[in-house]
Image 1: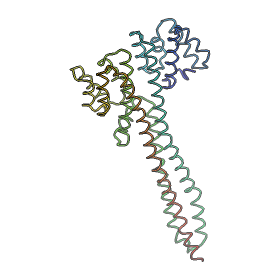
Image 2: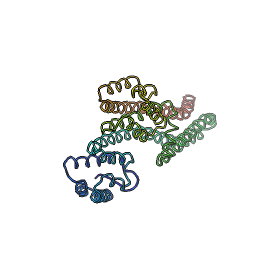
Image 3: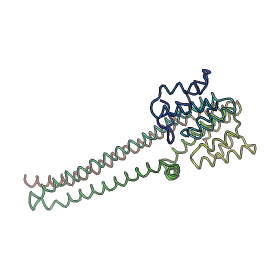
Image 4: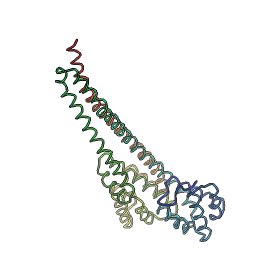
Length: 349
């Protein structure tokens, strides 16, 4: 199945699969219209209908670009690159590059989802445990202490303190959940994603991660464009449209201006801080040897590894923090009950 839906944008993983299939058809010398039509036999439902429409359009127009453009479900960058590949006569190479690019995007998005999902599960667990203690357990202990008489009633203040702590914790957890839901709703629109990116990029913990993601995409796009036959200026202009981070996009624009004035690409990157000194020197070597596209491809792979390690580091930081917080809250609530009971038992003994 190549596509799971016919509205909105299909996932990066399915985009990579489509590019792989189209590239294989071209390499086999099969007309795209006929080849894509044969793939509809494997699809079902909306995915099958989408492939059928793409195949019909490709057969009628003789252009994969027109087929994917009229489908309206593929990323604009992919559609644009397919048009460029057809114009330059390098559609096979572009499809292979797009397949690798969207496979990398799928892995990156999966890592981001995992980094968000685990803390969310821990927060929900915190809410459930605290709610059970406050709603079900604490009233029982309060009733037991009240039944023990006046001596025990003097300790009910501590129990009340535990209840207050639990209720405050529930309010904090509810606020965190509301923020997560709001972030999820904002991420459904382009403007909302831009606002979230702008806000979260100001946080010290996430700022470096966002820069790594943007650098990874920039390096991947540059590798694809350069290997497709574009000169450096054209590649920078197209790469500027792909990178979502506004700060990095502005740096790419400045880099393009400096390169157009005769400055070396590696020197411009180092001056603007798009890459570290080590990567800038690698790019300088790639410029001298004529292997800049290979250098950028290797850099993209390295940045992908760095991003995954950074995400793991963020998760590793969040997990113990939430566990410690949960332990402190539950411990405080239980102590507010156990200390009065221990006092009563000691007095009885």
